[in-house]
Length: 169
Image (cartoon, rainbow, N blue to C red; front, side, top):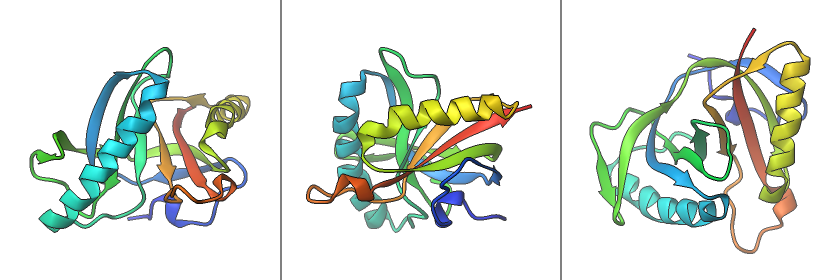
């Protein structure tokens, strides 16, 4: 089985590759306004990472969000962690229900955004435009992989977020 692309050096140009199926443990977030995302992320990782450790579940890569529809006034997405083996059932922690899910196996286009989260919207627009101009149809779900773990005192320019979108011909 191939390794997920986030284990590779940053993709400084759009790269087309086969992404493997990756089991995950996630929080489902439905109809969240964009300004509500930071709180969802903070609550999720504050509860999830210790809960996985307590259960002896091995984290197998960086945090991510998987989006089931194009963003608008609200977003529906999963936020969580890839794990070494699928979760058997639900996991409760910090008042949040976590469920098993997966990053899908797919032919994808990916690029690494290097910089603060405020630049992600433009980076996504550029990626989608490039995929379309290469004669491919961007699809759903698409996801972000937060390769660099953020901290309050870090320089945002050092953040790496991999953008991943499946495509069809």
